[in-house]
Image (cartoon, rainbow, N blue to C red):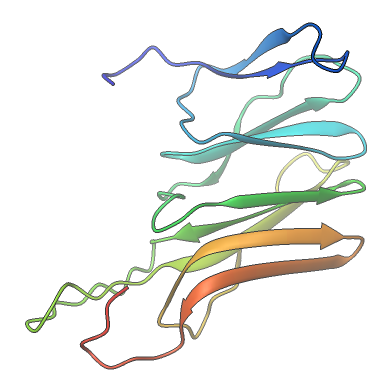
Length: 168
């Protein structure tokens, strides 16, 4: 795929698919983009390195400068996921910053992913602090998220503990 140039954007219809428009969001690579809508904003998410997000008002206008969500690879062993409800956007992702990779002479390497979460209110100028959700797990991956009001649910696959022959 070379070194670029890259652009990320959305293609959308305001008339049930009769006509379509394109909007460029950023001159960044985003091979696995996602989008969600809150009360006041459309949020765009892009991965590879780094994991980033941008938004623009629902009524139109310019896309904000992309904000970095994580400077680690966000699509390791699965995917990130997004949800929105009311004026809140939520995101969770697998992250390898604390990878517990261990040499395993009897099989494949043993490694770990963590699950992180962030949220943003429409009124906020930046994303909230990262929250490590998977503390105490040996490894986890493939998170999904759902949100309604103040209720947020994140699911994951993984394991709490295993012997040395178990691999991710």
